[in-house]
Image (cartoon, rainbow, N blue to C red; front, side, top):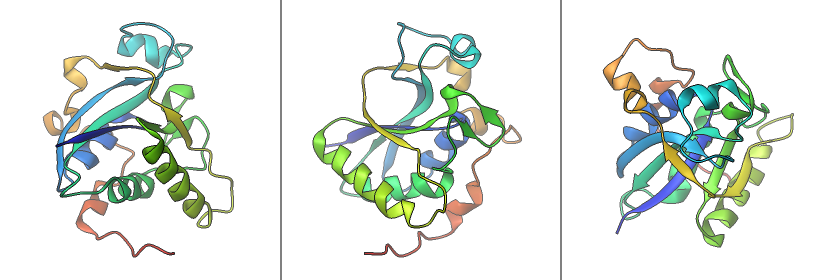
Length: 169
């Protein structure tokens, strides 16, 4: 039985391109998470003020990839200390957030962020929040970097070729 998690990590194109390639990820969909209006458009979210974050819904097989491993990959491709910004994208719509579905996911996300803090001098500002809503982005945003391999991406996709470092206890 598959599971889903929604991750916000700046521009959703690179986040989706990275997550899609992980063994055990069954599907990805980019969209907008935890905002204040119904059915927002990309232009509305990009303009700011909607409360939404660009995000990626990741469907995965927990028998192949654990949520812990998935979140560790997420944390390796974002800067969790930058508030409302990733790369050159600036604004609350580019915040980093783990949008959980239940208390187990929340506890795991909080644990991993606490461990992650040890790697940074600045405070980790990635939020852990319940998934309130998610709306898919327009079709042209889905699999954007697959359709446009030379498109903009702040995520280092070369990290896919490197194993995750061992986890500190």
